[in-house]
Length: 209
Image (cartoon, rainbow, N blue to C red; front, side, top):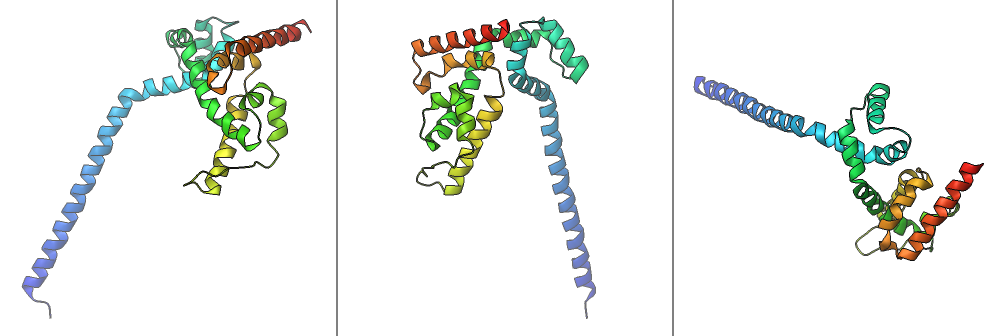
């Protein structure tokens, strides 16, 4: 039989536990609220910067025929993307930074993919037909120490996606802007210059048709 004192103690512990749980929830909610406010202060800037990074190659192409103000207006009215002409102009002034970032993202993917097919990275990046020919073929993977075969294969498939979605998705005019930042692949200035000349010849040939 439970005594009165035991019942009282049990009720006290239940109330104390509930209060502690309530206090913990309040603390969590307070932390989440603080983070939300912090994010609201920087979120718009971060989102805008991210959008500009993703859209920059297309903005570059469009800027050859449209004013930056027209690009800003079109993005806002047609797609509800708010990028001021000032933000776009700033991105255009820092174009080399965008091309360098793009090159730095592409280089590791090109290296991983090329090594898996025993070709040079430059060959893969230069010719989409080589990439399309190699992609369906099974890769030959070297598995580094401390890495599983599954991890190595996932890196390979990720590299193929990067090349397909972040390199060959763009016209040659855009890809040509990145070549001067791909010196890490062994391209010397003469090769880069020759490549750019070849790109211009192809572009003129298409325009003449």
